[in-house]
Each structure stands twice: as C-alpha cells, then as structure tokens.
Amino acid sequence: MAVLALYGGTPVRADEFAVWPVCDRQEEEALIEVLRGKKWWRFAFGQGVELIEPKEGERSQVALFQEEFARYHECKYGIAAANGTGTLEIGIRAMNLGIGDEIIVPAYTYIASAACVLQNNCIPIFIVIDPNTYNIDPGRIEEAITDRTRAIMVVHFGGQPADMDRILTIAGKHNLPVIEDAAHAHGCEWKKQKAGSFGLFSSFSFQASKNMTSGEGGILCSNDQGFASECDSLLWSGRKVGRPWYEFYRLGWNYRMTEFQAAILRQQLTRLDKQIRHRERLAHYLSKKLNSIDGISPLIQDERTTLHGYHIYMFRYDESVIGLKREKFIEALTAEGIPAASGYSFPLYKNPMFINKKFINGSFPLGTQYHDDIDYSSFEEKCPVSELACNSQAVWLPQNIFLGNERDMDDVALAVEKVLENKKDLAAWREKS
Ligand SMILES: Cc1ncc(COP(=O)(O)O)c(C=O)c1O
Image 1 (cartoon, protein in one colour):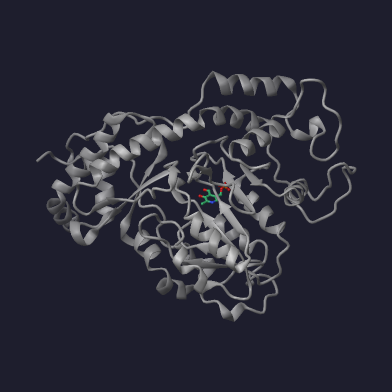
Image 2: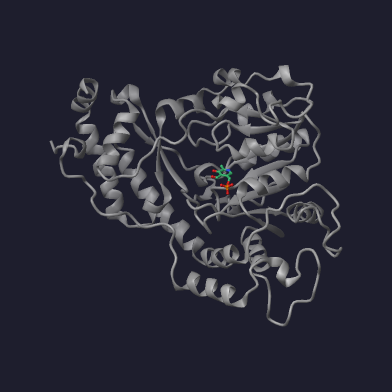
C-alpha cells in the first residue's frame, strides 16, 4: 500500500493541472486596442443612453459583446454588467414586484441567488434539490407555491441545466415567470437549447472562477424587448435611451461593465464551445472510473442535458459506506495533489442573516407584514438533500482540471483509490492526532 502524501509519502500528482484562466495573445491584443483607443467605457461611444452615431467601424466592445453573447445563447438581448449578482438584482427589480412577494429558489446555491430577492424587498422560499443532480427538485415546487409567489428561480448548478421540461410546465400552469441563474452555465444545453434562453431572463457571471471570465462581470439575457430596456436603464442609474444624461426615470444602479472586461470576454467567447466539449468528454471519462469505486457516485448527467459545462464536477461521497469522514478524505486527497473541496459548508438558509432575519437595515424585507410567517430554521427539515450535500456528501472538483487530458483524470481516480485504500489508518491516525 503506497504511503499517503499526508504522512510524508509521494503525492500521486506533483504537477499543476491546466491553469485557469486560459488567455493568450488574443486577449493581450484586444486589451491593448482598448487601452490605446482611450475609450474605456461604453458611454464614450454614445451607445446606451445618448445615441450619438458611432464613427464608421468604431463600436463599443460592451455593445458588441452583448450582441455576440446573447446571440450565442439564443437570446435577443444582452445587458452586460459589473457582476452576476447585479444582473440578478436588476432583473428582479424590473419585474416590479411588491414588498413581501415570494420567489422560489433552490436550497443549494450561492448567496447571490437569494440576495437578489431580498435586495428587492421580496422573500426567498427555498426548495429541496434533486439528489442526482443537485438542481432544484421540480416535484417539490408546487407545494411551496402560495398566493404571494411571483416567480420560480432555477440555478443551473455546476453547469447542468435544471429540468426545464417540468419547470416550464409548472410555471405555465401557475402563470409564473421563470428566472434562470445561469452563473455556472455558459454555453450549456437542455435538449439542444441553450441554458439562459428559457425564462423571462437569465443571469450569467464572469467572476474569476467561471467558465468565461474577465475577473468580474455579468450579463442578463432576455427575449423580451421592453424588459431588456428596463434592465438597461436600471444599470445606467435609471436613465432612458435617447434622453439627456441628467434625466433619471427610475431608481437604478451603476453596474456598468468596462470596455476592458468586454474586450476580454469577446475573446473568451471564441473558446467557449471547444472548452465545454473538452470538459464534458473528460468528465465522462472520470465518471466511468469513479463509478466503479464503492461509496463514490458522480452526479448524474440527465440525458436531456445535451451539453454540460462541468463548471463544478461533483461526486457524492457516502460516509456510511466508506467509513471515513468526508473532511478527512478531502484533506488526504488534497495532499495527493488533487484540488478537491466540500463546497458549501452549510445550506444557505443556515447563514446568520437568515436565522436572525436581519437583512435590510436590520429588518426583514422592508416594512413587510410577513415577518413572523417565515422561519428559516424550518428549512432544515424541508431540505434534507441540501443538508446531506453540505454536511457530508458533496465533493467538488474545479473546472480547470477538465481542460487537461485523460492522464490527469487517471491521476484523480488513482488518488481517490489510494486514499480509500488507506482509509482505516487514516481514520485511526486522525483520531489519535
Ligand atoms: C449560483 C451563482 N449565482 C450568482 C453568482 C453571482 O455572480 P458574481 O460573483 O458575478 O456576482 C454566483 C457567483 O459565484 C453563483 O455561483
């Protein structure tokens, strides 16, 4: 039995995996062009708010990126922004909801998916996830719909689209719009249709870890022209296209994307398709190997997910089968050179702000009469799959390692096997220390 790296043995993997972000001369040249052009924001081109005719051949990188990204995602309109938290907030503001209205949100997600609801004085209602995909469980949505429900949000978690067939049916039956948090799902497909093109609007993130990045950034996509222009205005401090710069029509934000970000993202978009397909191929290769290990089960790719971005590759670790705590397993696996993590340390609704219901200026969504109706600690019972995923089951691998080759995947599987071969010693050793 090989000695674990944790005990001073040789790690399975000493070399670095594929480095993220991927960038080269394409990004360098695009950035230099913007730098030398001295027009570093979209307003310099007069687009968006004051429609000054651009000079022949001279267009804003932001405007071009919006068109290119939206078209690629089968949407008519794209509104680029500073980050994906902002695009979610703006989209919900543009829905004109009332204080205390409810939005259904999956219980396994990042804070932004719920914060955008609260920032608009609405209430997130968490729904249990499907154990096979960690996406919202459509079978549990209807029981949470009340007369205050105004929308269903899906998160295409880790790059796998949620079950859009069932969700659109439920949404249609109850006449509710669907919001797609597609922060993880650039270029992904459900039955050959792009994630982000199904709902009233979708929101993507370009934060540093995402499958397309400019360090920070986001975009909102929609097929509804009126809705898109409302969002455009909200992002430009509440101005109106075609009206003078000092006229503000609604309470907005400054969440504008810079020309530098857009110049990088236009180049990143040219690599997206090839990278997704590469990641997916290697993820399938790894899943085949991991599926043969007792107690390890990669999440299932639904056959209707025709393109999975594997922004996060996840497998379920069964402590009761393996007999070793997940945290110990991850510590040993990391020492073998595999960048594994346990993901969210507890479900979102267990964060202090939910437990204490301290959101806006110390109060529950501003002025709401529904303060006593919601007890976020009750979601522990309602969302057992999210509890299990956070507490002991989920193991995450980052997207960059799937940009390498099959030998990299062999190393991941080998390291998992090595750690599990040593599980008895590991359990005993850690108990002693
Ligand atoms: C599921 C989800 N939604 C929204 C966001 C927000 O994106 P950003 O970091 O660009 O604000 C993230 C970011 O990590 C995310 O993981």
